[in-house]
Amino acid sequence: MGLIYADLLITNPAKEELAGIKAKALVDTGALFLCIPAHIATQLKLKEYEQREVTIADGSRKLCSYVGPVHVKYANRQCVTGAMVIGEEVLLGAIPIEDMDLIIHPAQLKLMANPENPNIPGAIVK
Image (cartoon, rainbow, N blue to C red; front, side):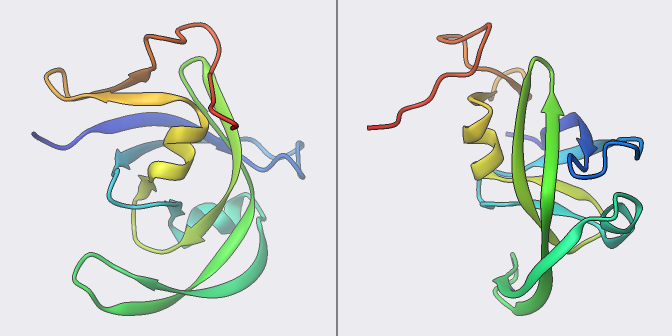
């Protein structure tokens, strides 16, 4: 399977006067969180809530900022989440993917709405 990217609109719902940022995000189900570069956190004036120690792909640990709130839109889906400020590209992890009820179509290398819930996101809350 190859790399999958998704075109997102990222905004700060606490600062609605700021324009959103369109970003091409790497879809990574091996990661949990939304990760954004520092320049996006700065442009959106996201609040830093704390520092977190994260483990990256090579197994090393880094300290990074946890910021929010972040409003993420993809196709007909959206969620509000926090984000780790790390790296040079946007990375869409499993938590926002699940929150928006999205699935990965491996043959088409595409992120898409869950076909069981095409019009509105579904969720399991039991």
